[in-house]
Image 1 (cartoon, rainbow, N blue to C red):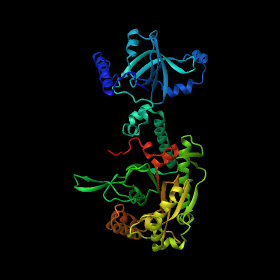
Image 2: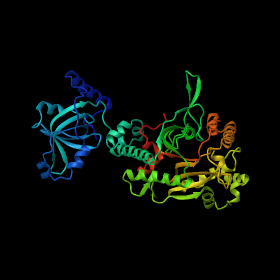
Image 3: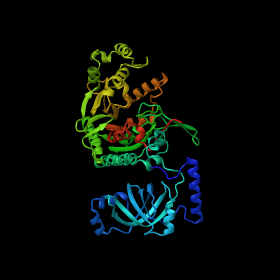
Image 4: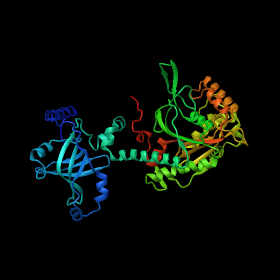
Length: 496
């Protein structure tokens, strides 16, 4: 998409402003009375398969389209341009035999990036390209800045992320990702509603950070003169709704975690969280599988997808315990070693896996799992039986009180979902909050606070329940085969 003007951007801007001033003088700048009745994609789908003769006989006329000029071939008496609307591209044929001669002369000065309106009829060129033969054209919006060069500007990652509007106007592939993202979220919502869940909204500013182990963003409410925290998860508010009598609730929410930037992390991100009273652990695993499979099917994926060079089979979800995965990958460890803190410390040191002296055996074991096992979980795998120490909101297992009834789903070596049977014993929860407070005092910035109101809610009685959080951004990354979270968030957070 090379602009017809030459020289630097400043020169182009100056020239285009001169053209804009001429439009202003004629009261033709930024008009708003052209209403399109068709879109490019619809015309291609309805008439693209017709032959040239069939289209001529069909007499598809009185069309009205609007879009941005993305390609222009100006000739003496006739020209071809391509416009791009919200659905796609279509070619336009403009001839001074069909429009006013002075208008055609002005048209030849229009620039790439200008938004125009066209009326006319459909035909096919000798090269079989679907084209609108214009009988009228109008310049709707004058673009003052040039579009990026096709093979230079669009390859600039910084421009794509910092000026997403340029990326979207220039790169149909990028736009398609965000259309798929919207379809994925719509399908997730539909799956939840069809299963009887109620969609709710909970606060984004919390008086106490909680619901997940993460460092919060801190803000200040002037009128109340108090510190507030952007939510790191909606969990504790959603479970209050279970206490109140709602049995199946979900929220597709924005959450915030004050952590570093990477291809997997953005400080502001989207999650699905849902909670179901009286649900079973295995039933929730099956339902989480259904959510992912339905979302993938909705955007036209096959059951076999590619993500970051790995082939993923979405028909086969495995279930493994954390312990058996660690033992399979770390042959020097025995089952007895997994609860021996001194052995785990020694092993972690030997493997150059860092840990803090305040960590217990469960936390060190999780660190070993994350470093040695997690990146290798390519096929969909539900990992179960996490240590209670690293699961402060999870219910203890009936047979082994040191582990929690919790699962995490990994695909392509990345965590996609986290779920567990909810802890509804107020005394046990209070003890774990105290452990979190102690961890925070020992320097853990990600530890939770003590939420007295949540304990009071549990004392009113919360039914047994299972809850799950699904990372929507990572789900979209996987289903659209993107390696960076920035490619699936319209406006990602970036370094200065």
